[in-house]
Image (cartoon, rainbow over all chains, first blue to last red; front, side):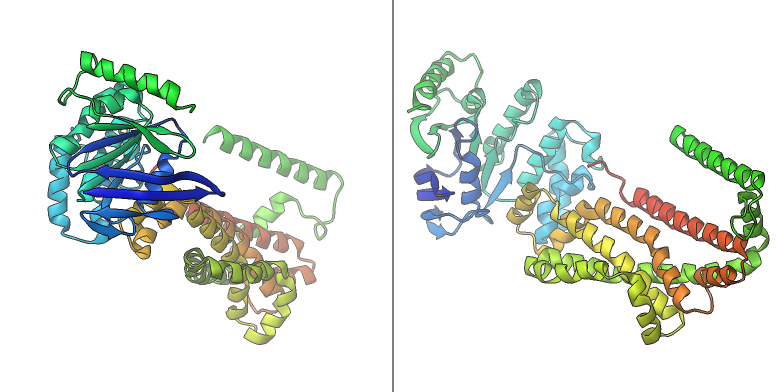
Length: 245
Length: 246
């Protein structure tokens, strides 16, 4: 589905990543796990064309594309809701900016509001609701992009620990209920373990994948699943050794 | 009245009291410095004389503000959209403020006549600068992560402008507009000093020449009141439009 080959990006003459490869099959949930500042966000910016790549090819459904800017939806750790619009107007932004059937979009967004527990809050402003609700609204907006590929940039890391746990299963809905293909970056090992089909451990500067894990138990997973704990031990062990090498 | 408003009013009363007392104790001639009570009296009883002049100056300021808005907003947006334009135009913008309006006033009266046009033009020169600069700064202050979001949504420039940049810049736009309306009186009055048949500036010059000092002060009082009124009006408008917390 998504094939990234030999992707290279320099910053001030230093490679942030060089010869980066990634293969993401349709409908899969892959997580890039690495420490803060290892170049994960630069990778996303390069994939989406926000910053130009220095080398490499990106192939989407067999076709080479310059970047994924108009093929993917994007969710950030900040909710990036506009404070002057209601939650509903924020969710409808992707349709408003590109043009389209507003009535149909409103129906669909209304259903998503209900599904994600935002029913009745459509006309509230972002500053009137909690951080978790804002992030759920951002999730609705991400779905309103109506794109098959979703890039998640530490989508829950701005939330407090309790709220974050409650929202992790909502991210899973993107895959199980809406059939999206997902690439997520995070530094949260537990989050990666709960959500991912494949976890790729990253080394910093230049960023590269040095180990792959595919947690076994079927989703939804429990934190205390013995198989998951075993994988977690392996990941932590590798992060300890691999991060410095 | 809130605490800040109360202390401001108390300070004004104190200063006026000192002024009143000093003028009366030392028996300062009225044509040099009239006491505040007499200025207030003159401003009230001479209202039929002052009002038409105030109306003219008010019209000059309002037209100046309208023309300034009509030019500053498109200019700031254009400079924001095309940074080349900003680089090319900013020296002229700064130069337009470096030249004292006083130096231009006689020329403008020659070019545009003794009527209202030369005064509107002068008010325009003074007002449009703070509006342009603040609006441009406001547009440029937009969080790049929001820009990225709009880029990924495939939003064309003018849609992003309407939905993101413009509301983002509104607080700074209003800050510039507030500065603009409060200094607008300067442009209009200078224009009237140099050559006019009506307006508060004209009234001040005339009264000054006849040593009717209380009337000069009364005109200044009216001018200040107009400036304050415009300031408050813009503040109200801002509160009405910006209802969100960023």
